Image (cartoon, rainbow, N blue to C red; front, side, top):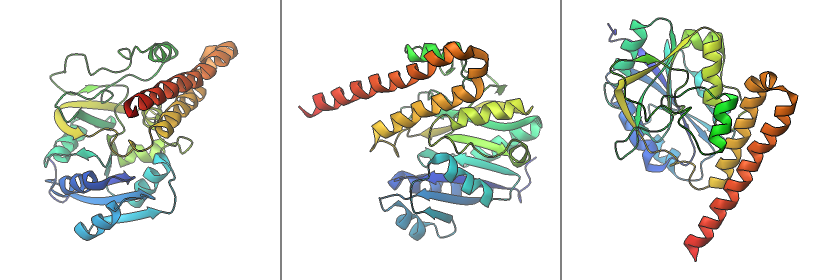
Length: 286
């Protein structure tokens, strides 16, 4: 049973979150469990932090003078807390009042779990891709490059009736046991944004901790809200993250020859998508 005095650290990395950041915080602070909330701002150019300070003075704010990337900013927030559980939450992700309470019940039932995620919904109510998935392999990476994602993402599979172990969850909502975090370590700051969540999941599993997906707990995620102003930069860092993950976890087993093929293929994919998106942008303006 969850003790009424139990608290959860909630860490939000913000970059031009706007009104959705305020909605996310309102939802967090309406939780049935007490929370200690830290917002780490990566030099936002909008008025989101000014509005945050006026509306929620109880929230701790760390303001960076430049955009340090998601991993570095998240680590700042993770280090600022002391509670036994910590939630890493996107600023465009909206909790329910009982979200944290239900998730902590899952941790109590499964002491072997170091990380847990819930069912993440798009605003239209459909399950969001990536909230339950498998870790990348060389084969699934090639499939992704060819446009086949079913091997990694499990959102099109039937929803399980009860919670289950998975290999990876979404970085939009990651609830961690602080004990496991202390053993595994912080996010790899070599990633600027994207793939650092997969890297973390891999390291949790390698350390012997389990990851659980809880289907009966749902949150809504307005995916891409904070990154829509710079799509090309986001696309670049996504592919840079893919290359880093490959070098860390897959290159040794694939051999030198495959490395010479895989890494150039990752960046070739970036160029193709960048050209495609650029042409689409020109067509929309014409």
